[in-house]
Image (cartoon, rainbow, N blue to C red):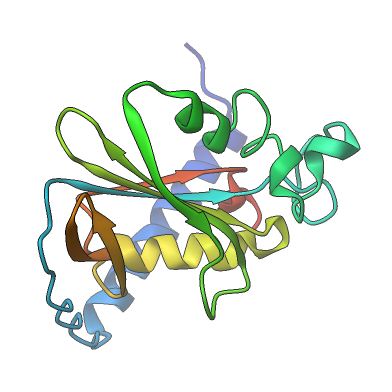
Length: 185
């Protein structure tokens, strides 16, 4: 395979930038990660899913039909309310039982939160529908959660037991669903 000179130059520039970024990061002092809040009655694994809703107006995506590309309308959104959307898939599942649905107090960028529990292994699944225009905020929160810099406590009833679980950095598995915003910011 023949590689063009332009590609070789681009690759060298990328390597140089990465090397300079690595040396800069090594000299910066990072704050230690916070201690996670105490959990109570955690039954099993916890999965936290960040869904940045499809949004024709604010994301650099190939436009989809207006009804499913409105990032402020989770009920009809491509990634949430359509037949292959997160809410639709898990709500119809025989494996997952919905425990709650609603808004997240103090987090207007999250339009809806769904909480499910797996019927066989008791794992808890939390899925958040982020406003489409807040994709950058969503991706930043996801990055902070992956690096253990951010936690959120969730109180819920699991059967007859009260539980307090750590979302974000406390989850066993973090998932991002949405447009690849890394191409833009």
